[in-house]
Image 1 (cartoon, rainbow, N blue to C red):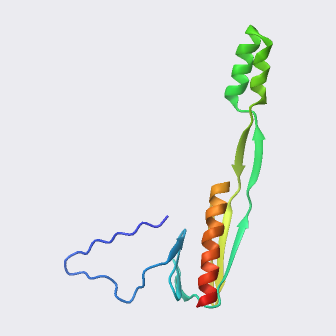
Image 2: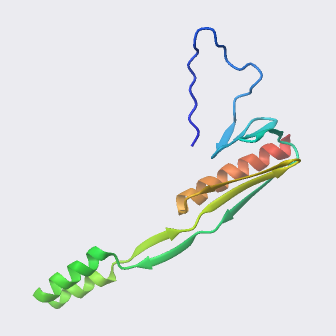
Amino acid sequence: MVCRVTANLPGYGAWPDMPEPLLTIGDISVTQTQVIVPQGTFPLRGTTWTLQDSTQVTEAIPAYAIVLAILFFVVCLLGLLFLLIKEKRYSGFVTVTVTGDRLFHSVQFPPGPATVGWLTHQVGQARALAAAA
């Protein structure tokens, strides 16, 4: 995430030639006409945005369910119902890549359904801005 400080210090003005970003994806900022990455500033026109979801989902029985099943099995057979508890675990990453003239930059994010939904929306907006530029 990008954190921006907007305090004006005495003797220091705001950057007059730096437009305000319309959206930010990790360390990629997008203005109306530019893409700003750590390597520099590049034109937005002609950029290609890709989203790659390398998420793997596994289901497993959590440790607390096994402990509860053992404890309640001693009391009654209903303790075996605790073994039906499943927990989803996400592994991998989600990558956003922007390419253009002399530009290649990618950012990785942790996996999860909320992350993928948010990134899909952000990349869609970036593609729309690139098409309009």
